[in-house]
Length: 93
Image (cartoon, rainbow, N blue to C red):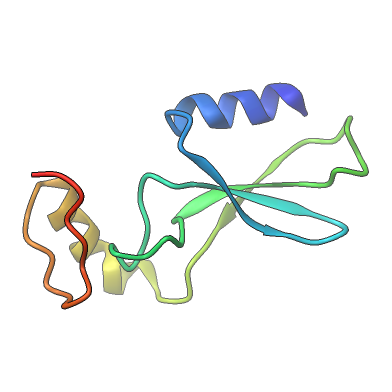
């Protein structure tokens, strides 16, 4: 499982955070992108069971809104466009 976690961290550019944790499963998220764009809810991540260190991590999708509704917002931010939500935080020019 260590290789799965290291691979995920590498491709997330080390921007990895705990999305949720239960006694059975830990969900890690790629914190670079979230939807809605101003949230700290990651788009995707991985889940694994700490009780099974020999197991494999599995891909997870997060967020409650359909991606088709929000993909335009994310694409605008990726291209450097303005954020239309009033609570949008601009981190860098």
